[in-house]
Image (cartoon, rainbow, N blue to C red; front, top):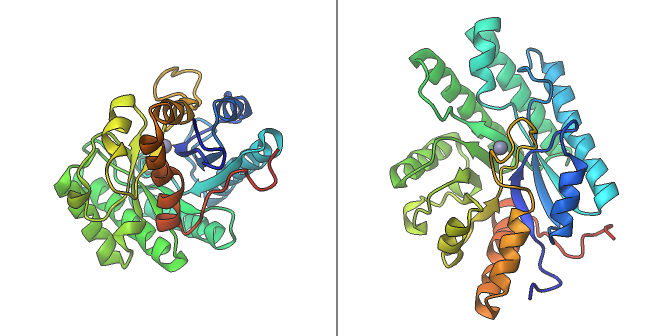
Length: 289
Ligand SMILES: [Zn+2]
């Protein structure tokens, strides 16, 4: 049995106002979910070319979070940043330097939203998960370093988009954060698809894709770590990622195995948030039904 006071949190998802949106959040809640970490995304089908376009993108995410809180009664926390791949699409249109300037300005804006309590982390930030030409690669690295600096100044975590990491990759990421003055413990590797032993992750918390075998593998390992679906809410790509009901379903299946496994669920849903975000998800959700 799932403890009545155990929050169930999906650490990374996207929802689209023109997709399933609130309905998907309702399915998450019906399956037992209580908290969503909602990451922003491009909603218009094209990459923003202006800071105002980013502002309206972030506002769309915030409005969706407000609607879900009100209509579904779960807690939604926003994660804001320009998507790292945006730079690659914007560079041919704006020129590389202007595209970099736009990304850094959008990161500064996301940082202000964190300072105002409208978002809890910068994300997704990071590097392309595919090879790009050298000058573009260098530009994405400059933008990523800027993101790490904003997180340091705003005292918040970053949610990192990158290729899947092995031990060397975790070390390199921790070193990049250290150079920027940000603690590795606040750098969350999102969409982790292999479970690297905690001793080889250089203190970087992974947000593990909630596939059954990965959840079983990470469950016994020390925290902090999170579970996520990276749900995309894109009707054009059904089944592209895990369904939004996956995390609560996995939690229920684990709880059915007995008290010892159930106890482990406090790691991804409560203790890791306390450690990385300095925030304790609570159940029942304050202000919820
Ligand atoms: Zn994502």
